[in-house]
Length: 296
Image (cartoon, rainbow, N blue to C red):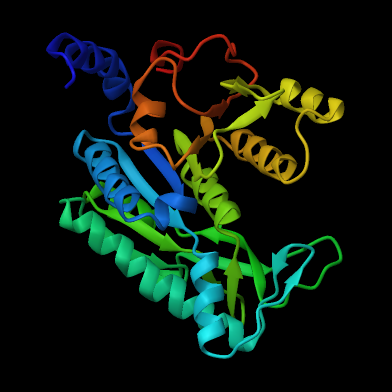
């Protein structure tokens, strides 16, 4: 049982963050174990509801790759990967739309609403929320895989102003109305940049950015690219880091990578001085400083 003095310390530590972030917008990319483990699903629903209740605007963008693969197999549709990325043909885009914009989106929305979060399930088609074009994938043809061209910011702001929590499936139409499957990480980044969000948070199955098995709590772009050149940041983490700093350059104040397998990791990262993952910040903010006073 937590001692009463410990509870008081937690609340006191959280207070300046609550004050600083009231009225600000956070975009959360929801994925990994936090989307599949039943206990973590409920924890996430409660956490985002708490954030909304204390006055933070929340936009959620979710993936669902594993379930897309599972449903496609049940329907007898082959899943193909090109350079580690899903190839989306006409049959697969139907599965993607059904699973992402249907089943998963409504499950997340329902779970949040059961906790009083006032969530609204959407995909890029709704009120032209996302406009998409075929993605440029360095010479690889991924079929109906797209990238976000524009975001209907007035629509999202209308929902946020009226206390709603958009839950967005990353499926959107191109110029001719053809649906495209959009990588959820990239869709979240595009939406955060368009909204000039205070934070973009990636919930994943990793602790954050590790260098020599040690968690790096804060990174600026020069530090990150020095670590990439040294080979300390490598593999699939490189595009994640590059994308994060593209988002920061577009006006998002901070990008976080946190471990969704840890209960309440979202609250721990946002409302404690030490945090739990890695935050990527503009160069004009000292990496030694995490406090809200620096950012307010």
